[in-house]
Image 1 (cartoon, rainbow, N blue to C red):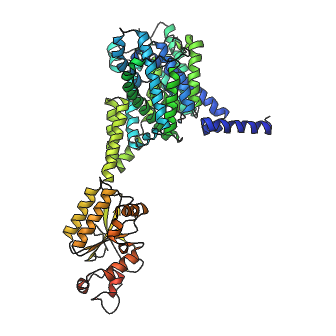
Image 2: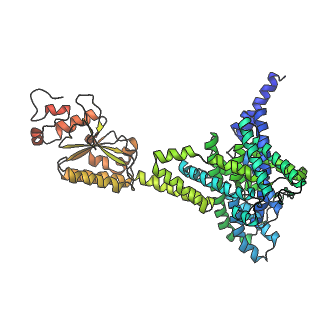
Image 3: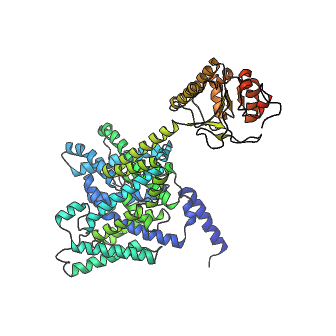
Length: 601
């Protein structure tokens, strides 16, 4: 039975480790540890065929692909911010790296050893650049990836995963598309294994929600494959299997980096940094939203940079967050980064000790599990909600989905971010300017919007316009605000005085200050004036810097509406117009010329 001293020692250890690794250390229990270890085992099994295939895309030995799934995965899990992202070789980085290295490798006569050395050197540069971004706290640019972009990216990624997995379900090899699998002939044996795997996973998830249903389904798939092969196949077909993998540990050595090629490698490293970091942060944000865990983009950037830097010393190529492994990691019930760390260690153990069993892993079973993950990714309720509440954001999500299907993942993410920024700029460049008034008599009556003449709204004052400014007046918004102010002067020239309710005018820049100065000049030329009610401190600071507050006059800025209306109505309006006015909108109108003997309310 644990003693109080032992409990205190464990608590102290958890706090100490938590300061280095994160608060998740204090959440560790035997249950979460067991769940993370099982999720890590699934991640190790899933990465085996992928790592070998991605190494072929780069043009390096298969062992480098497996090595990239070990040390970078371990380091990124423990040093990064995301609890669920599994890092390693990915489609996007492998394709980009292979395309960049091809001209350099061709110049070296196509020597595979030369290609591997260039890949390792380039990985070191990518890691150092990512660390530099983290140190300068530029990883926070990931905050510009909006929820709509993430929704579209997730939907597109789900379709890509499903498309890739369908080729394996039909009996194709690890990288075969469904069309290629159909051309080669559908394998009844593969379909049978995939169907059994999918049915088992669904049934186990229903009966044992928190259990390792995905891993259990994969074990059943191995058993089914063994039975089919023992019977000599099914309907003349066999199941494509993983086969015996190569070694997954290449040892530690100094990364080769040719100074003569540095000028050529630096632009490549910058491009790969953007690709890898964009994909990793996007996946981390997606998983953080799904799990409710916090995400520090700068720390995640640091973890990815450290993973690539250390990975270069172990003979790895560029690694980043893997969508095909991170989402199954979430689906398998992972709770802490130990799932990612254990996935790396499981992979080493499996390759070293479990090669005979791994040789029986059916690609059709892996494809069936990925189909299950893809189906769980599509958030239909979020799409319906976006369609119902904000069609513009729905369009951004849909465009990102299409871009994810037609472009590289990192380009799709950047395109979605650009669309979000353009939409935000468009909205912020059109701040609302609302005409205010009253809908009932009395002293304590609140202002109401009267732009559309709602029922019960009282007429406006013939001489004073009440305008509420909502939003910042920056250079992009100046044309919209200026046109609205010109329209007011053109359509209602008798309202020569303008009171701007500026409590919701968040900020202005130099162009915004010049705009209000121009409005002041135009109003005074028309024998009226410009006034402000409750401007924000940051607005007043800009006015003081530009001298606008002196030109406007301290008597034209008011802290509350009662003092503003009393001053303007009693001291600034034209007596002759008031004498003929029948509106009598304000309480102060009872003290103006033409007022009846009994005060009107």
